[in-house]
Image (cartoon, rainbow, N blue to C red):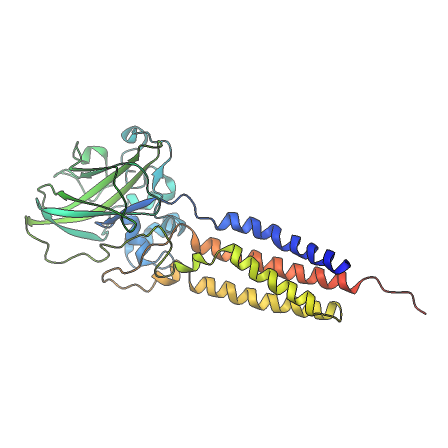
Length: 346
């Protein structure tokens, strides 16, 4: 009877923080970004949030930290409702007017995709949460200045392509559109306005137009990646190992320590140490599997990795730490209760 109460007490100690960890590990509202031509935020994420290679991405991290890169799919405004020019100031178009992403507005040598002037191009918008609405594609005017942050006046007044209510296939909205006749360096700006809510998403993609109708001589690195709805690919599959699974493992180990221990607090303490070692190994594995670690060694060639959802590295480590503390506390509590009060001396 008493042993059953002890197990229930240990279970409560373990379950409470695990429930909190489950909330923390749930991905934030994640939606999407332009994958081809690759957007600035996606290009920096592919370089690796913790150790980006290019000067512009290093500058972004210095200015905003790494979290914006893990949140690559939410450069958004929740209540835009079509009021884009009204609520986003000149010079802040690439960041959607948000301080969190201000580094995206900086001019510099961003990764650029080569495109045929006046030819056809298949745009690929990588999505992690599909929504109804329309994606509008704008291009900069012939007199825009790439050495200064983008302004509304530097965009052509009408979009050259509109993708109405796209349907995602393998985590991608695709549309083949006729490109404007441009030459040299330009920027493509997308506005994805949802029709089922006032929320809108924004992207900036640097491009270089070649000869009229001619295919580009080379393809820019990083084009054509996919962001699947499920978290798969390099460094992302560790997010599938949920907090609930880790909690069940920890609870099983804690219960086993109590059930098999018959000599009191000393063995209960040994059980806690065992759980601590297991938890430490789990945390180390989470760190090794984080998106930053998986992407930091990418070279300049074609990107092969699928982008994971928002915040998986941070929440995974947080969850592992909480489960570790919970399992250790449960084992110690179990050992103390089993020891019981000292009997009278005869």
